[in-house]
Amino acid sequence: MSKCKVIALANQKGGTGKTTTAVNLGIGLANEGKRVLLVDADPQGDLTTSLGWTDQDNLPVTLSTQMEKIIRDEPIEAGEGILRHDEGVDLIPANIELSGMEITLVNAMSREFTMKSYLSELKKDYDYILIDCMPSLGMLTINALAAADSVIVPVQAHLRKKGMKCVCWI
Image (cartoon, rainbow, N blue to C red; front, side):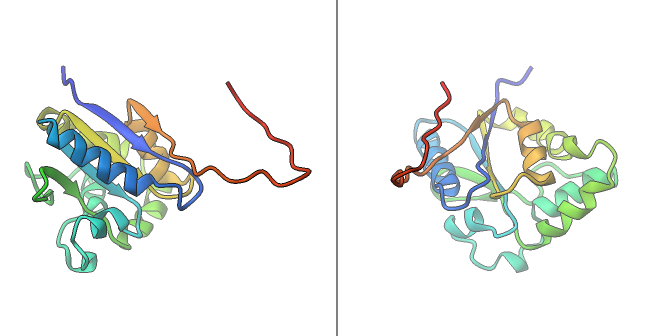
């Protein structure tokens, strides 16, 4: 049984630090000697860009490519499409093609488990898999949550405006 921990970084709001948290947590874990895979599950590809791959549209293999293979029950070669970063983390990149995957997943069998199926083969090679989600609760985020053992929800604190009620859950 794999000891790999899969963690999704999710929040429906943009600009809360999901990508920043994924990069810094991933590199921090790598600096501690952990084997880390970062998964860019956002069609905007900010995680991919922040790690230095600025021309995502010319990457031959992305998360979308691999999820399409899972849906079609096609084989995926070991390490296919995984990019290696100088700071010790690996990356499954994303680009705008991933937005089309959102639509494809709607009609796919076991659609909420497509990413989990893909990542289950990779878990044996990593201590941590961090999934950077898009700022919505669409099929890609649902896939990430289904694949994850736990979730980090980065939030940005805002000033409370006069007259607004503050609701807290404990």
